[in-house]
Image (tube, rainbow, N blue to C red; front, side, top):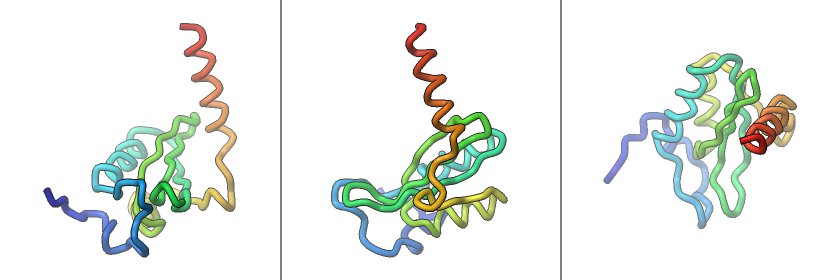
Length: 114
């Protein structure tokens, strides 16, 4: 089944994807958009392509909740962020926000209390 390339994933892709990973799809981008629209203070953090994974983006909300999805190339998430008027950062330059780590810690503590 061929999927539509609504977000320019194929057009904006530079190189071929990593061997062990699947390609980004419209569903990946739509999941990031849905996350951003349903939470406050969302910022995107672009993670570089590696040997094993395609380029990904992490969407981090104001409270530290986050989600990660494949995006195909940094240009795709930059376009999405521009359309949503949200900031996008290169995680190699900025690192992850401290609120993301705090959110993970809260989740671990909650799971330990169940």
